[in-house]
Length: 116
Image (cartoon, rainbow, N blue to C red; front, side):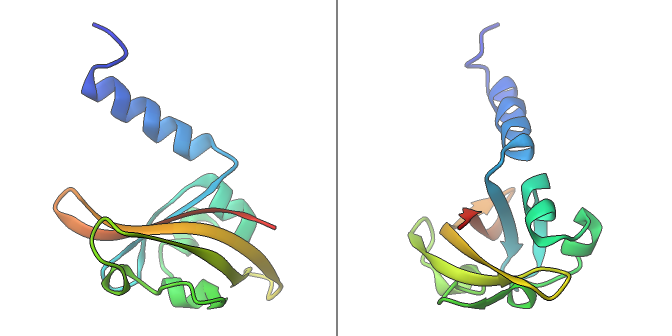
């Protein structure tokens, strides 16, 4: 069994994303967060449970960040800079690359980025 096995790859990718310093936010077709990594929680000042109760529009305030997958064609990407609001009311500039895709049969919007 090598590292190229699909289950091993999935596990390694999941752990890499969770433990990365890069922010990863996944929203459903309605813009509601369905998955976030630890870096997103730290950057925004929310617990994972709190972030999963929010919509992308609760966090992204400006900069043209799309609110959800409906604004992107499937498998297309978009990049930009947005102001995102932290739990404490402060804002931070967020540089992102985003794309719409399908995961487990569900259309989702994945945003990956860093604070500036």
